Amino acid sequence: MKIYFAGPLFTPYVRQFISEQARKLRAKGIEVFVPHERFNQMITPERVDLLVNQGVLPETMRKGFDPEELMGMVRDGKLSREQLGLPKMTPETIFDTDFEGLNSANAVLALLDGTQVDDGTACEIGIFFGQMQLDRHNKKGIVGFITDSRGVRLRSSGFGQNLFVLGALEASGEIFTDFDLVTELLLRWKTELEQ
Image 1 (cartoon, rainbow, N blue to C red):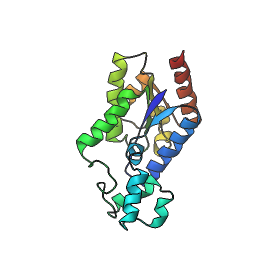
Image 2: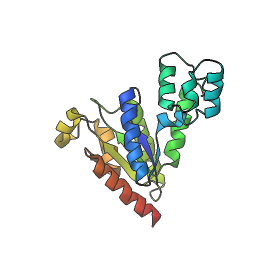
Image 3: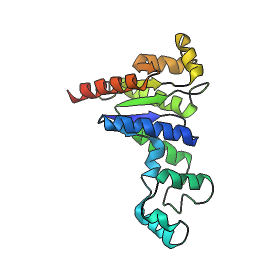
């Protein structure tokens, strides 16, 4: 089973959190598409060696590099996407990459933290909900995950989410505050797909 992990990817700690949760799911045999990791995977050892040879990166990077560290250097203006061999950050690039991930996914896991759901995440929820209407066999559902205490306190009134987004979530899955419950549901859907 393949899931698309949706969430706001604008801060290093949220990207790290999403990647950590994705690792837990991968350890359980679930394939996870994480948008920011997709670009990290495009950074090749050959490209890093070239940049080391040019004196752009330190020699220590030749023995092993952290793609997230390199992407941090891009965000800090110390490296360009072009130097790393990455496509430009355009709306078309982001949409095409993420839409490919949604199309190939069997489920969506959406991080709902914040005072409202991230607009990109809401869009991904909507697109996947539409895909579910056309393919109920392969598109299992959408799982919301919230750790933000502001939303958790509002659990009885819909987690403080936009009612339209909340409706899509409730019609297609569940919202959890415990990642073990998220994993349990995804594993159940994985078993259903395999049968």
